[in-house]
Length: 575
Image 1: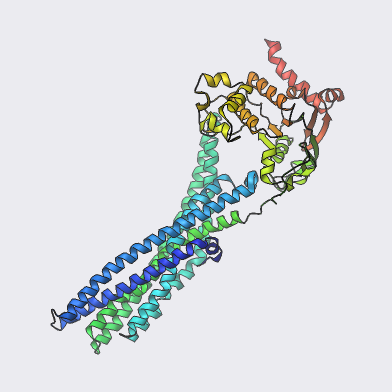
Image 2: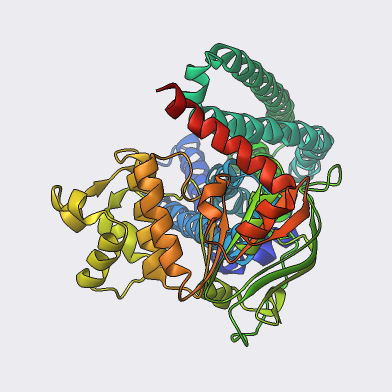
Protein backbone atom coordinates (compact mmCIF):
# COMPACT_ATOMS: atom_id res chain seq x y z
CA UNK A 1 0.00 0.00 0.00
CA UNK A 2 2.16 2.81 -1.33
CA UNK A 3 0.65 6.17 -2.23
CA UNK A 4 2.97 7.74 -4.79
CA UNK A 5 1.17 11.09 -4.54
CA UNK A 6 1.85 11.23 -0.83
CA UNK A 7 5.50 10.27 -1.16
CA UNK A 8 6.08 12.79 -3.95
CA UNK A 9 4.38 15.43 -1.80
CA UNK A 10 6.90 14.92 1.00
CA UNK A 11 10.10 14.23 -0.96
CA UNK A 12 12.26 15.40 1.95
CA UNK A 13 11.35 12.26 3.92
CA UNK A 14 12.79 9.82 1.36
CA UNK A 15 16.39 10.03 2.62
CA UNK A 16 15.28 9.33 6.20
CA UNK A 17 13.16 6.37 5.10
CA UNK A 18 16.11 4.92 3.15
CA UNK A 19 18.47 5.44 6.10
CA UNK A 20 15.93 3.83 8.42
CA UNK A 21 15.66 0.74 6.20
CA UNK A 22 19.46 0.44 5.94
CA UNK A 23 19.86 0.71 9.73
CA UNK A 24 17.27 -2.05 10.24
CA UNK A 25 19.02 -4.25 7.67
CA UNK A 26 22.38 -3.85 9.41
CA UNK A 27 20.64 -4.71 12.69
CA UNK A 28 19.28 -7.87 11.01
CA UNK A 29 22.78 -8.83 9.88
CA UNK A 30 24.01 -8.29 13.44
CA UNK A 31 21.20 -10.51 14.70
CA UNK A 32 22.14 -13.24 12.22
CA UNK A 33 25.74 -13.03 13.48
CA UNK A 34 24.54 -13.28 17.08
CA UNK A 35 22.36 -16.33 16.32
CA UNK A 36 25.25 -17.97 14.45
CA UNK A 37 27.52 -17.38 17.45
CA UNK A 38 24.88 -18.78 19.81
CA UNK A 39 24.31 -21.87 17.64
CA UNK A 40 28.07 -22.44 17.38
CA UNK A 41 28.44 -22.14 21.17
CA UNK A 42 25.75 -24.79 21.74
CA UNK A 43 27.46 -26.98 19.17
CA UNK A 44 30.80 -26.62 21.02
CA UNK A 45 29.12 -27.52 24.29
CA UNK A 46 27.44 -30.56 22.70
CA UNK A 47 30.86 -31.73 21.51
CA UNK A 48 32.37 -31.17 24.96
CA UNK A 49 34.42 -28.14 23.91
CA UNK A 50 34.29 -25.63 26.78
CA UNK A 51 37.05 -23.21 25.81
CA UNK A 52 39.58 -22.48 23.14
CA UNK A 53 39.92 -19.81 20.55
CA UNK A 54 36.76 -20.83 18.67
CA UNK A 55 34.54 -20.41 21.75
CA UNK A 56 36.15 -17.09 22.67
CA UNK A 57 35.74 -15.85 19.09
CA UNK A 58 32.06 -16.86 19.12
CA UNK A 59 31.56 -14.97 22.39
CA UNK A 60 33.24 -11.87 20.96
CA UNK A 61 31.11 -12.06 17.82
CA UNK A 62 27.95 -12.32 19.94
CA UNK A 63 28.95 -9.32 22.08
CA UNK A 64 29.85 -7.25 19.04
CA UNK A 65 26.57 -8.17 17.34
CA UNK A 66 24.54 -7.06 20.40
CA UNK A 67 26.31 -3.68 20.48
CA UNK A 68 25.90 -3.17 16.72
CA UNK A 69 22.24 -4.12 16.83
CA UNK A 70 21.64 -1.66 19.70
CA UNK A 71 23.31 1.17 17.78
CA UNK A 72 21.38 0.39 14.59
CA UNK A 73 18.02 0.27 16.36
CA UNK A 74 18.72 3.64 18.01
CA UNK A 75 19.62 5.06 14.59
CA UNK A 76 16.45 3.56 13.13
CA UNK A 77 14.36 5.29 15.81
CA UNK A 78 16.17 8.56 15.12
CA UNK A 79 15.53 8.36 11.37
CA UNK A 80 11.89 7.48 12.06
CA UNK A 81 11.57 10.62 14.18
CA UNK A 82 13.23 12.80 11.52
CA UNK A 83 10.93 11.41 8.84
CA UNK A 84 7.83 12.00 10.98
CA UNK A 85 8.92 15.52 11.87
CA UNK A 86 9.51 16.34 8.21
CA UNK A 87 6.08 15.03 7.23
CA UNK A 88 4.25 17.07 9.86
CA UNK A 89 6.19 20.20 9.00
CA UNK A 90 5.71 19.89 5.24
CA UNK A 91 2.03 18.88 5.24
CA UNK A 92 0.95 21.48 7.77
CA UNK A 93 2.85 24.13 5.84
CA UNK A 94 1.13 23.07 2.62
CA UNK A 95 -2.31 23.16 4.30
CA UNK A 96 -1.54 26.61 5.70
CA UNK A 97 -0.31 27.88 2.34
CA UNK A 98 -3.43 26.47 0.69
CA UNK A 99 -5.57 28.37 3.18
CA UNK A 100 -3.67 31.54 2.33
CA UNK A 101 -4.19 30.99 -1.39
CA UNK A 102 -7.91 30.33 -0.91
CA UNK A 103 -8.13 33.47 1.20
CA UNK A 104 -11.36 34.45 2.95
CA UNK A 105 -13.33 32.14 0.63
CA UNK A 106 -11.87 28.93 2.15
CA UNK A 107 -15.17 28.26 3.93
CA UNK A 108 -16.81 27.69 0.54
CA UNK A 109 -14.84 24.43 0.32
CA UNK A 110 -14.42 23.08 3.87
CA UNK A 111 -15.55 23.84 7.39
CA UNK A 112 -13.12 25.32 9.88
CA UNK A 113 -13.46 22.34 12.23
CA UNK A 114 -12.75 19.86 9.42
CA UNK A 115 -9.62 21.75 8.37
CA UNK A 116 -8.36 21.88 11.96
CA UNK A 117 -8.97 18.15 12.49
CA UNK A 118 -7.29 17.29 9.21
CA UNK A 119 -4.27 19.49 9.93
CA UNK A 120 -3.87 18.12 13.46
CA UNK A 121 -5.19 14.56 13.83
CA UNK A 122 -4.95 13.69 10.13
CA UNK A 123 -1.32 14.75 9.84
CA UNK A 124 -0.48 12.91 13.09
CA UNK A 125 -1.82 9.71 11.52
CA UNK A 126 0.49 10.21 8.54
CA UNK A 127 3.39 10.58 10.97
CA UNK A 128 3.07 6.83 11.62
CA UNK A 129 2.72 6.14 7.89
CA UNK A 130 6.06 7.77 7.07
CA UNK A 131 7.91 7.10 10.31
CA UNK A 132 6.98 3.44 10.73
CA UNK A 133 4.92 1.92 7.93
CA UNK A 134 6.99 2.89 4.87
CA UNK A 135 10.39 1.90 6.37
CA UNK A 136 8.86 -1.35 7.62
CA UNK A 137 7.36 -2.01 4.19
CA UNK A 138 10.73 -1.91 2.44
CA UNK A 139 12.53 -3.69 5.27
CA UNK A 140 9.90 -6.47 5.22
CA UNK A 141 10.73 -7.03 1.54
CA UNK A 142 14.50 -7.22 2.14
CA UNK A 143 14.66 -9.19 5.41
CA UNK A 144 13.18 -12.55 4.20
CA UNK A 145 15.39 -12.52 1.11
CA UNK A 146 18.49 -11.83 3.24
CA UNK A 147 17.60 -14.65 5.64
CA UNK A 148 16.88 -17.01 2.74
CA UNK A 149 20.30 -16.32 1.21
CA UNK A 150 21.91 -17.11 4.58
CA UNK A 151 19.90 -20.26 5.38
CA UNK A 152 19.99 -21.70 1.89
CA UNK A 153 23.63 -22.57 2.60
CA UNK A 154 22.56 -24.30 5.84
CA UNK A 155 19.35 -26.16 4.93
CA UNK A 156 17.89 -25.13 1.59
CA UNK A 157 14.66 -27.08 2.07
CA UNK A 158 13.79 -25.41 5.39
CA UNK A 159 14.81 -22.01 3.93
CA UNK A 160 12.54 -22.56 0.92
CA UNK A 161 9.57 -23.54 3.13
CA UNK A 162 10.03 -20.41 5.24
CA UNK A 163 10.34 -18.15 2.20
CA UNK A 164 7.22 -19.61 0.56
CA UNK A 165 5.12 -19.08 3.72
CA UNK A 166 6.12 -15.39 4.12
CA UNK A 167 3.93 -14.00 1.25
CA UNK A 168 0.82 -15.37 2.98
CA UNK A 169 0.93 -12.39 5.37
CA UNK A 170 0.77 -9.67 2.67
CA UNK A 171 -1.93 -11.73 0.93
CA UNK A 172 -4.03 -11.48 4.10
CA UNK A 173 -3.29 -7.75 4.23
CA UNK A 174 -4.47 -7.24 0.66
CA UNK A 175 -7.56 -9.32 1.44
CA UNK A 176 -8.73 -6.86 4.14
CA UNK A 177 -7.47 -3.67 2.44
CA UNK A 178 -10.65 -2.80 0.53
CA UNK A 179 -12.83 -3.59 3.53
CA UNK A 180 -10.56 -1.53 5.77
CA UNK A 181 -10.56 1.44 3.38
CA UNK A 182 -14.36 1.65 3.40
CA UNK A 183 -14.56 1.35 7.17
CA UNK A 184 -11.88 3.99 7.74
CA UNK A 185 -13.51 6.36 5.27
CA UNK A 186 -16.76 6.10 7.27
CA UNK A 187 -14.77 6.50 10.47
CA UNK A 188 -13.19 9.77 9.31
CA UNK A 189 -16.48 11.14 7.99
CA UNK A 190 -18.10 10.39 11.34
CA UNK A 191 -15.13 11.90 13.20
CA UNK A 192 -15.06 15.19 11.28
CA UNK A 193 -18.86 15.43 11.35
CA UNK A 194 -18.90 15.06 15.12
CA UNK A 195 -16.14 17.68 15.37
CA UNK A 196 -18.14 20.16 13.29
CA UNK A 197 -21.23 19.61 15.46
CA UNK A 198 -19.22 19.93 18.67
CA UNK A 199 -17.60 23.22 17.59
CA UNK A 200 -20.95 24.65 16.48
CA UNK A 201 -22.65 23.71 19.75
CA UNK A 202 -19.75 25.05 21.80
CA UNK A 203 -19.81 28.40 19.99
CA UNK A 204 -23.59 28.63 20.35
CA UNK A 205 -23.77 27.42 23.96
CA UNK A 206 -25.09 30.75 25.27
CA UNK A 207 -27.89 30.78 22.70
CA UNK A 208 -28.76 27.15 23.42
CA UNK A 209 -29.00 27.89 27.14
CA UNK A 210 -31.15 30.99 26.61
CA UNK A 211 -33.70 29.06 24.55
CA UNK A 212 -33.32 25.89 26.65
CA UNK A 213 -32.40 23.98 23.52
CA UNK A 214 -29.22 22.51 25.00
CA UNK A 215 -30.90 19.23 25.94
CA UNK A 216 -32.11 18.65 22.37
CA UNK A 217 -28.63 19.44 21.05
CA UNK A 218 -27.17 17.14 23.67
CA UNK A 219 -29.35 14.32 22.32
CA UNK A 220 -28.12 15.01 18.78
CA UNK A 221 -24.51 15.05 19.99
CA UNK A 222 -25.12 11.72 21.73
CA UNK A 223 -26.42 10.28 18.46
CA UNK A 224 -23.31 11.53 16.63
CA UNK A 225 -21.09 10.12 19.38
CA UNK A 226 -22.85 6.75 19.20
CA UNK A 227 -22.38 6.66 15.42
CA UNK A 228 -18.69 7.44 15.91
CA UNK A 229 -18.41 4.74 18.60
CA UNK A 230 -19.92 2.15 16.27
CA UNK A 231 -17.59 3.19 13.45
CA UNK A 232 -14.62 2.93 15.83
CA UNK A 233 -15.66 -0.52 17.06
CA UNK A 234 -16.03 -1.76 13.48
CA UNK A 235 -12.50 -0.58 12.75
CA UNK A 236 -11.14 -2.24 15.90
CA UNK A 237 -12.96 -5.50 15.09
CA UNK A 238 -11.50 -5.50 11.60
CA UNK A 239 -8.01 -4.86 12.99
CA UNK A 240 -8.30 -7.59 15.63
CA UNK A 241 -9.48 -10.18 13.11
CA UNK A 242 -6.74 -9.22 10.68
CA UNK A 243 -4.04 -9.43 13.36
CA UNK A 244 -5.29 -12.86 14.45
CA UNK A 245 -4.98 -14.16 10.89
CA UNK A 246 -1.47 -12.70 10.54
CA UNK A 247 -0.37 -14.25 13.85
CA UNK A 248 -1.65 -17.64 12.74
CA UNK A 249 0.27 -17.38 9.46
CA UNK A 250 3.46 -16.04 11.07
CA UNK A 251 3.82 -18.52 13.90
CA UNK A 252 2.45 -21.38 11.83
CA UNK A 253 5.01 -20.71 9.09
CA UNK A 254 7.85 -20.43 11.61
CA UNK A 255 6.77 -23.71 13.23
CA UNK A 256 6.66 -25.43 9.84
CA UNK A 257 10.22 -24.32 9.07
CA UNK A 258 11.40 -25.57 12.47
CA UNK A 259 9.73 -28.95 11.89
CA UNK A 260 11.52 -29.35 8.55
CA UNK A 261 14.87 -28.46 10.17
CA UNK A 262 14.30 -30.96 13.01
CA UNK A 263 13.44 -33.74 10.53
CA UNK A 264 16.67 -33.04 8.69
CA UNK A 265 18.57 -33.01 12.01
CA UNK A 266 17.49 -36.61 12.49
CA UNK A 267 18.75 -37.26 8.96
CA UNK A 268 22.22 -35.91 9.75
CA UNK A 269 21.96 -32.11 9.73
CA UNK A 270 24.60 -30.69 12.10
CA UNK A 271 23.30 -29.38 15.42
CA UNK A 272 24.67 -25.86 14.80
CA UNK A 273 22.86 -25.66 11.46
CA UNK A 274 19.61 -26.98 12.91
CA UNK A 275 19.76 -24.48 15.79
CA UNK A 276 20.48 -21.62 13.39
CA UNK A 277 17.37 -22.43 11.35
CA UNK A 278 15.23 -22.66 14.52
CA UNK A 279 16.59 -19.40 15.95
CA UNK A 280 16.11 -17.47 12.69
CA UNK A 281 12.78 -19.00 11.61
CA UNK A 282 10.71 -16.38 13.45
CA UNK A 283 12.80 -13.57 11.92
CA UNK A 284 11.44 -14.54 8.51
CA UNK A 285 7.95 -13.52 9.64
CA UNK A 286 8.45 -10.85 12.28
CA UNK A 287 9.17 -7.98 9.82
CA UNK A 288 6.10 -8.83 7.75
CA UNK A 289 4.04 -9.35 10.93
CA UNK A 290 5.15 -5.93 12.19
CA UNK A 291 4.22 -4.49 8.81
CA UNK A 292 0.73 -5.91 9.28
CA UNK A 293 0.43 -4.09 12.61
CA UNK A 294 1.52 -0.80 11.05
CA UNK A 295 -0.80 -1.44 8.12
CA UNK A 296 -3.94 -0.67 10.12
CA UNK A 297 -2.51 2.58 11.44
CA UNK A 298 -1.29 3.40 7.95
CA UNK A 299 -4.78 2.77 6.54
CA UNK A 300 -6.13 5.30 9.01
CA UNK A 301 -3.46 7.69 7.79
CA UNK A 302 -4.43 7.02 4.18
CA UNK A 303 -8.05 7.84 4.97
CA UNK A 304 -6.82 11.11 6.48
CA UNK A 305 -4.61 11.64 3.41
CA UNK A 306 -7.68 11.45 1.17
CA UNK A 307 -9.14 14.41 3.05
CA UNK A 308 -5.83 16.26 2.95
CA UNK A 309 -5.55 15.77 -0.82
CA UNK A 310 -9.20 16.72 -1.31
CA UNK A 311 -8.45 20.02 0.41
CA UNK A 312 -5.07 20.59 -1.25
CA UNK A 313 -6.58 19.87 -4.68
CA UNK A 314 -9.45 22.31 -4.15
CA UNK A 315 -9.74 24.60 -7.13
CA UNK A 316 -8.22 27.94 -6.25
CA UNK A 317 -9.50 31.29 -7.41
CA UNK A 318 -7.32 32.77 -10.11
CA UNK A 319 -4.78 35.03 -8.51
CA UNK A 320 -4.57 38.38 -10.22
CA UNK A 321 -1.31 40.19 -10.90
CA UNK A 322 -2.44 43.80 -11.14
CA UNK A 323 -1.15 46.02 -8.35
CA UNK A 324 -2.72 49.35 -9.31
CA UNK A 325 -6.16 50.73 -10.13
CA UNK A 326 -7.20 53.90 -11.93
CA UNK A 327 -9.58 54.90 -9.12
CA UNK A 328 -11.02 53.84 -5.78
CA UNK A 329 -14.73 53.65 -6.53
CA UNK A 330 -16.31 50.27 -5.78
CA UNK A 331 -18.91 48.84 -8.13
CA UNK A 332 -20.78 45.67 -9.03
CA UNK A 333 -22.30 45.06 -12.43
CA UNK A 334 -24.90 42.35 -13.18
CA UNK A 335 -23.75 40.50 -10.07
CA UNK A 336 -25.36 37.14 -9.27
CA UNK A 337 -24.44 34.68 -6.52
CA UNK A 338 -25.70 31.54 -4.76
CA UNK A 339 -24.22 29.49 -1.92
CA UNK A 340 -25.41 26.32 -3.66
CA UNK A 341 -27.40 25.41 -6.73
CA UNK A 342 -30.77 25.44 -5.00
CA UNK A 343 -31.39 29.15 -4.42
CA UNK A 344 -29.97 32.33 -5.91
CA UNK A 345 -29.13 34.92 -3.23
CA UNK A 346 -28.24 37.82 -5.54
CA UNK A 347 -29.65 38.33 -9.02
CA UNK A 348 -28.38 40.86 -11.58
CA UNK A 349 -27.30 43.41 -8.95
CA UNK A 350 -25.69 46.63 -10.14
CA UNK A 351 -24.46 49.15 -7.55
CA UNK A 352 -21.68 51.73 -7.31
CA UNK A 353 -19.99 53.39 -4.34
CA UNK A 354 -18.33 56.60 -5.46
CA UNK A 355 -15.10 58.05 -4.10
CA UNK A 356 -15.36 60.45 -1.14
CA UNK A 357 -18.97 59.50 -0.66
CA UNK A 358 -21.09 57.49 1.75
CA UNK A 359 -23.08 54.87 -0.17
CA UNK A 360 -25.67 52.80 1.70
CA UNK A 361 -27.31 49.46 0.94
CA UNK A 362 -30.48 48.71 2.89
CA UNK A 363 -33.21 46.11 2.86
CA UNK A 364 -35.22 43.68 4.89
CA UNK A 365 -33.47 40.80 6.62
CA UNK A 366 -32.64 38.14 4.02
CA UNK A 367 -32.67 40.55 1.10
CA UNK A 368 -29.00 39.83 0.30
CA UNK A 369 -27.29 43.01 1.51
CA UNK A 370 -24.79 41.24 3.80
CA UNK A 371 -24.00 38.74 1.05
CA UNK A 372 -23.23 41.68 -1.23
CA UNK A 373 -20.88 43.10 1.43
CA UNK A 374 -19.10 39.75 1.79
CA UNK A 375 -18.55 39.60 -1.98
CA UNK A 376 -17.02 43.07 -1.93
CA UNK A 377 -14.81 41.90 0.95
CA UNK A 378 -13.62 38.88 -1.09
CA UNK A 379 -15.16 36.19 1.11
CA UNK A 380 -16.62 34.36 -1.90
CA UNK A 381 -15.24 33.87 -5.38
CA UNK A 382 -17.88 31.87 -7.26
CA UNK A 383 -19.99 34.81 -8.42
CA UNK A 384 -21.05 35.80 -11.91
CA UNK A 385 -20.93 39.34 -13.19
CA UNK A 386 -18.27 41.89 -12.33
CA UNK A 387 -16.91 43.63 -9.26
CA UNK A 388 -14.61 46.55 -10.02
CA UNK A 389 -12.37 48.96 -8.17
CA UNK A 390 -12.21 51.97 -10.41
CA UNK A 391 -12.39 50.37 -13.85
CA UNK A 392 -10.24 47.38 -12.82
CA UNK A 393 -11.87 43.97 -12.44
CA UNK A 394 -11.26 42.78 -8.89
CA UNK A 395 -10.34 39.31 -10.19
CA UNK A 396 -7.27 40.74 -11.94
CA UNK A 397 -5.91 42.34 -8.76
CA UNK A 398 -3.42 40.54 -6.55
CA UNK A 399 -4.77 39.50 -3.17
CA UNK A 400 -2.33 41.83 -1.39
CA UNK A 401 -3.56 44.75 -3.47
CA UNK A 402 -7.19 43.95 -2.67
CA UNK A 403 -6.53 43.73 1.07
CA UNK A 404 -4.57 46.99 0.93
CA UNK A 405 -7.44 48.72 -0.88
CA UNK A 406 -10.48 47.30 0.96
CA UNK A 407 -11.19 47.09 4.70
CA UNK A 408 -14.22 45.13 5.88
CA UNK A 409 -15.81 45.64 9.30
CA UNK A 410 -18.76 43.43 10.22
CA UNK A 411 -21.18 43.46 13.13
CA UNK A 412 -19.06 40.86 14.93
CA UNK A 413 -15.51 41.91 14.04
CA UNK A 414 -13.19 39.44 15.75
CA UNK A 415 -10.89 40.60 18.55
CA UNK A 416 -7.95 38.41 19.49
CA UNK A 417 -6.78 37.48 22.97
CA UNK A 418 -3.97 39.79 24.02
CA UNK A 419 -3.99 43.54 24.54
CA UNK A 420 -5.54 46.55 22.85
CA UNK A 421 -2.15 47.22 21.26
CA UNK A 422 -1.98 43.66 19.87
CA UNK A 423 -5.38 44.07 18.20
CA UNK A 424 -4.56 47.48 16.73
CA UNK A 425 -1.02 46.83 15.57
CA UNK A 426 -2.11 44.10 13.13
CA UNK A 427 -3.73 46.82 11.00
CA UNK A 428 -0.48 48.80 10.84
CA UNK A 429 2.55 46.92 12.21
CA UNK A 430 4.83 49.97 12.08
CA UNK A 431 2.40 52.30 13.87
CA UNK A 432 3.75 54.22 16.85
CA UNK A 433 1.83 54.62 20.12
CA UNK A 434 0.74 58.15 19.15
CA UNK A 435 -1.01 56.80 16.04
CA UNK A 436 -2.72 54.07 18.03
CA UNK A 437 -3.92 56.55 20.64
CA UNK A 438 -5.19 58.95 17.96
CA UNK A 439 -7.31 56.11 16.47
CA UNK A 440 -8.73 55.45 19.94
CA UNK A 441 -9.54 59.16 20.37
CA UNK A 442 -11.40 59.22 17.06
CA UNK A 443 -13.55 56.27 18.14
CA UNK A 444 -14.12 57.74 21.63
CA UNK A 445 -12.33 54.89 23.42
CA UNK A 446 -9.50 56.96 24.88
CA UNK A 447 -11.23 57.96 28.13
CA UNK A 448 -12.30 54.42 28.93
CA UNK A 449 -8.87 52.90 28.22
CA UNK A 450 -7.11 55.69 30.13
CA UNK A 451 -8.93 54.46 33.23
CA UNK A 452 -7.63 50.95 32.53
CA UNK A 453 -4.12 50.17 31.24
CA UNK A 454 -4.36 52.17 28.03
CA UNK A 455 -2.78 50.25 25.14
CA UNK A 456 -1.85 47.40 27.47
CA UNK A 457 -5.46 46.84 28.54
CA UNK A 458 -6.11 43.07 28.32
CA UNK A 459 -8.53 41.83 25.66
CA UNK A 460 -10.04 38.39 26.10
CA UNK A 461 -10.71 36.06 23.16
CA UNK A 462 -13.47 37.60 21.07
CA UNK A 463 -13.35 40.71 23.27
CA UNK A 464 -15.80 39.17 25.75
CA UNK A 465 -14.44 41.37 28.56
CA UNK A 466 -15.61 44.49 26.65
CA UNK A 467 -19.11 45.77 26.01
CA UNK A 468 -20.66 45.41 22.56
CA UNK A 469 -20.11 49.08 21.81
CA UNK A 470 -16.51 48.98 22.98
CA UNK A 471 -15.79 45.96 20.82
CA UNK A 472 -17.21 47.65 17.73
CA UNK A 473 -15.37 50.90 18.41
CA UNK A 474 -12.10 49.02 18.86
CA UNK A 475 -12.76 47.32 15.52
CA UNK A 476 -13.41 50.77 14.02
CA UNK A 477 -10.11 52.06 15.45
CA UNK A 478 -8.37 49.13 13.78
CA UNK A 479 -10.06 49.98 10.47
CA UNK A 480 -8.93 53.61 10.80
CA UNK A 481 -5.33 52.47 11.29
CA UNK A 482 -5.51 50.24 8.21
CA UNK A 483 -6.19 53.45 6.29
CA UNK A 484 -7.43 51.76 3.12
CA UNK A 485 -9.08 53.71 0.32
CA UNK A 486 -12.29 51.66 0.48
CA UNK A 487 -14.21 50.69 3.63
CA UNK A 488 -17.14 48.28 3.75
CA UNK A 489 -19.19 48.40 6.96
CA UNK A 490 -21.66 45.54 7.32
CA UNK A 491 -24.03 46.37 10.18
CA UNK A 492 -21.04 47.81 12.05
CA UNK A 493 -23.38 49.86 14.26
CA UNK A 494 -25.93 47.15 15.02
CA UNK A 495 -26.69 45.35 18.28
CA UNK A 496 -25.18 48.14 20.40
CA UNK A 497 -26.52 51.00 22.47
CA UNK A 498 -27.70 54.25 20.83
CA UNK A 499 -24.78 56.27 22.20
CA UNK A 500 -22.19 53.86 20.72
CA UNK A 501 -24.13 53.69 17.47
CA UNK A 502 -24.06 57.47 17.09
CA UNK A 503 -20.32 57.61 17.78
CA UNK A 504 -19.60 54.87 15.25
CA UNK A 505 -21.79 56.55 12.63
CA UNK A 506 -19.96 59.85 13.15
CA UNK A 507 -16.66 58.05 12.49
CA UNK A 508 -18.07 56.40 9.34
CA UNK A 509 -19.41 59.70 8.02
CA UNK A 510 -16.05 61.40 8.70
CA UNK A 511 -14.23 58.62 6.80
CA UNK A 512 -16.61 59.08 3.85
CA UNK A 513 -15.25 62.60 3.36
CA UNK A 514 -11.92 61.22 2.14
CA UNK A 515 -12.61 57.59 1.25
CA UNK A 516 -15.02 55.32 -0.59
CA UNK A 517 -17.41 54.04 2.08
CA UNK A 518 -20.12 51.42 1.60
CA UNK A 519 -22.51 51.07 4.53
CA UNK A 520 -24.81 48.09 5.01
CA UNK A 521 -27.44 49.02 7.55
CA UNK A 522 -30.81 47.82 8.73
CA UNK A 523 -31.47 51.16 10.50
CA UNK A 524 -32.57 53.59 7.79
CA UNK A 525 -32.03 56.69 9.96
CA UNK A 526 -28.28 56.07 9.56
CA UNK A 527 -28.55 56.63 5.80
CA UNK A 528 -29.94 60.18 5.88
CA UNK A 529 -26.60 61.71 4.87
CA UNK A 530 -25.70 59.03 2.31
CA UNK A 531 -24.93 60.28 -1.20
CA UNK A 532 -26.66 57.21 -2.70
CA UNK A 533 -28.92 54.55 -1.21
CA UNK A 534 -29.66 51.18 -2.82
CA UNK A 535 -32.72 49.30 -1.57
CA UNK A 536 -32.55 45.52 -1.90
CA UNK A 537 -35.51 43.17 -2.05
CA UNK A 538 -35.20 39.38 -2.52
CA UNK A 539 -31.67 39.64 -3.92
CA UNK A 540 -32.37 42.44 -6.40
CA UNK A 541 -32.09 46.23 -6.42
CA UNK A 542 -35.65 47.50 -5.95
CA UNK A 543 -34.93 51.23 -5.66
CA UNK A 544 -32.02 53.66 -5.61
CA UNK A 545 -31.52 57.35 -4.93
CA UNK A 546 -30.80 59.82 -2.16
CA UNK A 547 -32.74 59.74 1.08
CA UNK A 548 -35.00 62.60 -0.06
CA UNK A 549 -35.63 61.03 -3.48
CA UNK A 550 -36.56 57.68 -1.99
CA UNK A 551 -38.90 59.23 0.54
CA UNK A 552 -40.65 61.13 -2.24
CA UNK A 553 -41.12 57.96 -4.30
CA UNK A 554 -43.36 56.48 -1.62
CA UNK A 555 -42.01 53.05 -2.45
CA UNK A 556 -40.43 50.22 -0.47
CA UNK A 557 -37.89 52.47 1.27
CA UNK A 558 -40.61 54.86 2.52
CA UNK A 559 -42.66 51.96 3.88
CA UNK A 560 -39.63 50.50 5.68
CA UNK A 561 -38.65 53.90 7.12
CA UNK A 562 -42.15 54.74 8.36
CA UNK A 563 -42.45 51.33 9.97
CA UNK A 564 -39.10 51.72 11.75
CA UNK A 565 -39.95 55.20 12.97
CA UNK A 566 -43.27 53.94 14.30
CA UNK A 567 -41.51 51.24 16.29
CA UNK A 568 -38.86 53.63 17.62
CA UNK A 569 -41.40 56.31 18.59
CA UNK A 570 -43.83 53.85 20.15
CA UNK A 571 -41.97 53.68 23.45
CA UNK A 572 -41.38 57.43 23.53
CA UNK A 573 -45.09 58.20 22.97
CA UNK A 574 -46.09 55.75 25.68
CA UNK A 575 -43.63 57.40 28.09
